[in-house]
Length: 118
Image 1 (cartoon, rainbow, N blue to C red):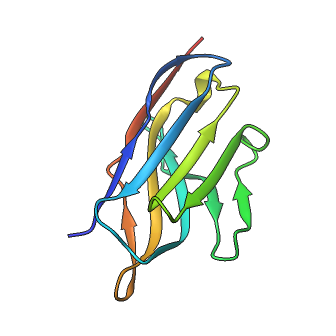
Image 2 (cartoon, rainbow, N blue to C red):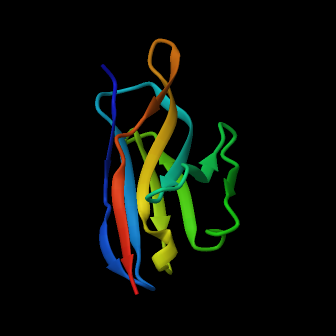
């Protein structure tokens, strides 16, 4: 069964950077679109960044200018580059991607913890 495997989370000081990766567990034809969400303890899961089939991107106001989402179809991987991290960025981050195998399906990653210390 196709899965998205996330990595790159961890503990970082405020002002630091992390790059999250979300890789397909097996070879796929393409990742057509993707998004990153995050969920802090006791809060709902919120959309952080998205990238459409056209390549256009969108970001939550709270991360604009600091986060960058991208897709590398040669590596079957979605990335989220996070710079100038703040303590309020602390959450579990989840990727979601529209993946084309034989048909197109939407798949979720298992989540990766990001903790930003002040």
